[in-house]
Amino acid sequence: MDKILVHGGHPLSGSIKISGSKNSALPILAATLLTREPCVLRHVPDLSDTNYMLQILTHLGAGVERASGTVSVRAEKVESVAPYDVVRKMRASVCVLGPLLGRCSEATVSLPGGCIIGDRPIDLHLKGFEALGAAIRVENGNVKVFAPNLHGAVINLRGKFGPTVLGTDNVLMAAVLAEGTTVIEGAAAEPEVCDLADFLNKMGAKIEGAGTRRMIIEGVKELHGAEHAIIPDRIEAGTFLVAGAVCGNGITINRVEPKHVSAVTSALTDAGFQLQSTKDTITVSPNGALKPLKLTTEPYPGFPTDMQAQMCALLSTTDGISVVTENIFPQRYMHLAELKRMGARVEIEGATATIQGVEQLLGAPVMASDLRASAALVLAGLKAEGVTEISRVYHIDRGYEHLDEKLGALGAHIERVKAD
Image (cartoon, rainbow, N blue to C red; front, side, top):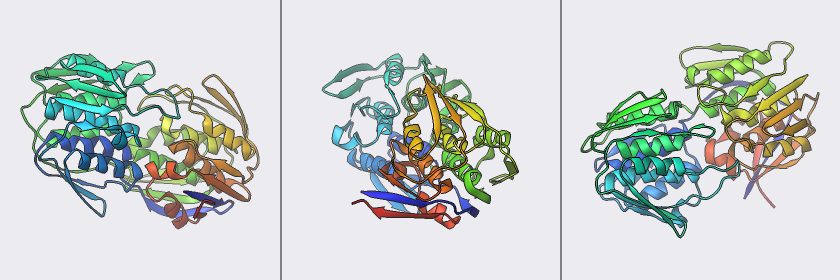
């Protein structure tokens, strides 16, 4: 098992290119199961999560080829069962349920289990399948769905903390082959859902309203193969913008969609940073004295929960008192205990964290608890005095393509070593 050592105090400068979106790539890879014909996907990031999804596709019978960020999938014949040993490593593997149900009229997928950032049930996914006419059984840790004939329906997917992204993806992929018209109310509007809808439409689906809370799907009899380029990863883009804010002399991120990260750039501007954007680049530069912030995570286009930890790292050394409220996953604060080990001053009450900025963080051994917490600890280490030793960095490899190498190219003193 690897760990990452970050030698703090070295300013960042230069430019890097943003990889394809993990949260787009996973459901889009799953969607290739909906057709017998070949699909070609470009800008698929090289991550442990995408590698797991390719293993799942192979297990289900698809032929998979990968070379330099391009993945070709041909699912001429498909099995409808994905057991625990195949799906246990990644919660997003549950998104094969929708395409298997649509393609095979049945699916058996092992439940993905819990998540360190809080309860993330799939009840809304199953509610959507039931509305489409599926019978559902949960037994022995597996969810089994069966529907000889899927039919259109009106489905509301809004949950307790907002729309469900994976649930919207899953129901959307089942509905494209259902008979009649499906209306998804309370749909997730994230760019990754729009990217999936774009790919499905290229395959012959008839989807309207992607990017809004109301999607309309006119079912078709079959889909065909298609080529598609995955959108840039907005969370990776936001993470590098915060890295430039934490300790940059001016860095530029290339291959980014500025609209997708507008909540992050607005927050950085409010904090006192200077940002300049073009069609597909953003540059962040220091701009004098910084100001504390009040942030609340919300569904897109609000401030993303997946950027909350990184902003906490930045605000830990921003003079004054910042207040962060986590409305999506109220338990998502395990990184704050590790930041405290580095000298951060933080108090948590319910879903709200109050951060008193300190002048300097100090390097310390810390442990990553989840994907975005890992990135936050790396960012804190860039600013800290001394060496920050981050364990459990397999979390980073789930969602950041070569994070240490990209930061090193910007001037960070960062190394990956084998743990004792």
